[in-house]
Image 1 (cartoon, helix red, strand yellow):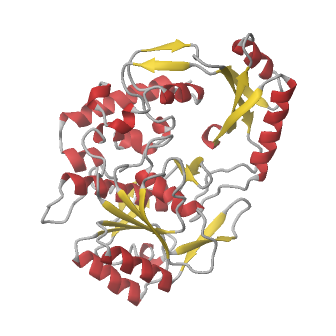
Image 2 (cartoon, helix red, strand yellow):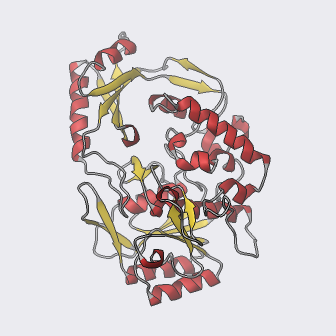
Image 3 (spheres, helix red, strand yellow):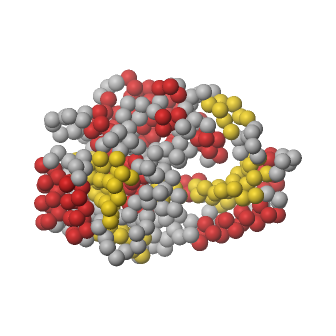
Length: 420
């Protein structure tokens, strides 16, 4: 695999991803590389242990992302350490999957970053500290959290993205407000409409996380279909409730109907509905119109609701369950939905669980399929592993092409190299 054969999204990350991957305990993929000293300035990384209330994955609808208090406490510690050691705080990066916050500190000229990192590692709040290295790779590297994404290995995304990115496919995310300014979503949202009047017009957790699974452009995570034209249609709103540090999203018939109407009338090709509730006549009729126009509708299957809940139970809708929750019922597909790194409002990244995010994976996969088969006269179909309902993304898109086997071997090698 060389930089010449990869999409430009991967080429842009050739230098920066390798350095971040090393700091996160992940492997740059693939190709020879050489550690070099930065041309300008010197930096160390300080990993602070997360307090208990820091963002963590939850399996409920809204997920658990915590509040900003723990982040503020960590930043105060990092600021103090920088001041005591004559350093400057440059930036920080929350890394909940590793249980740390990463802070980047600038080291003055004439001092050894290695010695500074060794001294900082002795502080009780510091999990570890290390110098920042830059890497020049001959082949393109993956985003820093790529190897932690379940779909990276299971769906062999790097190889699929050599063939398709979902370019130009219109995907409607009907959910809570998407943070269109998030670094991994900036420029990805073609249309943003708010069908929830009287509430703050700001990015919300669930919608932003779903959008990232589908369309993140590869700053730190790669969406399943980063080339799509995302339609972010707010029909839900975030409300307090649930366990500490969590929130829930609520929608109603009117807001969902307005969003569905907009998606259908503006020629969406895929509609993602990561939500569930009781059957609804109005919404059912709108779904029938969408399906009659050959729009793919994907919904999250909720095992706690009769029939998996609506709209997953509606005829013609693609129902998707989290494959980590056990075998899915007949007629329900399974996709990655456990420990999924994705986008969170406020230029952050975190882990999410649940069928909401499994459904988002499948919406992205259908976007890839639509790019590959733009004029297909028959409905697009998913390939599954045996009768389990677990989706084989590579076989779905590429059949038995050799690229599937090559991808499996390369990603397995990179995953093994990332293990401590």
